[in-house]
Image (cartoon, rainbow, N blue to C red; front, side):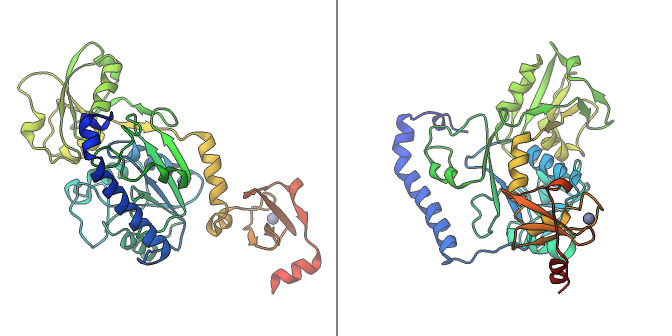
Length: 374
Ligand SMILES: [Zn+2]
């Protein structure tokens, strides 16, 4: 990442006219899709974009994993779509599994298969990925890994993640690190800051060959080679240093294709890498290679607001069951209620949150019940 992105240096000012042009084009494209001059695609099931407004790492992969896990725990079936960054997929959507080649489907999606049991589909044309999922899988919600600026795909909810570098100097590409003008942030549903709103927590190290586990404490005061081919390698190096590990840093471009000589050094020091790099090094690793899995917890207030927004979508109302008989509830638009015909109860939806308590419910009259049967 160029250093002038972090401050308003003479070079940044010099590049600013190009940034106006860049921002202008993005804005125009967005407008063209919104006005219907360019055709955009609406997924038949709710779609959440988890994206960035800046260039560089923002902890998106662990966030998408945590969100998918959350839905699975709620009994909601998610699917993940991705462009497959660093991969080679062209037009044909491809379902990713543990054994997929990260050089074809992208390193991040292969990493996700280690954590979530849901369809993960890669295709640069996101519409095709959605259609593939609808055709082949039963699913309630789609999570789009990145694609905030992919306006050919309509979305129901937009979540923007911010890295520790924040907004940089506040300029668009190429003078700064913004992919869109700052005003765009006013129109998104959520803005979450890495290491403030959600914390990336390093887990014990795993050996690439033996899968052996090593507590990070065991490396305190020791020297290791640290490898990172990610959007913001410094964040990985800092993380290790903060934990008290001495490092010899080796940074590589994002989605780098590693060769054995890149990760083997002629000494006895352990080699520690990110999990995203590890999925690409499985075939060339030795007993000296370890990776650091990262996990994140989603903030509770974010999940509550997210549920509130999702409650407006029919599939999410269908998933809810009657607290009395555990039977299926039926959504009634007028009045805005959830009905259990078996118990003759209507549960109100207040501020888009279903109040699923027997004490809050209204008893249906026989006429209303008759109406329902029609
Ligand atoms: Zn009931």
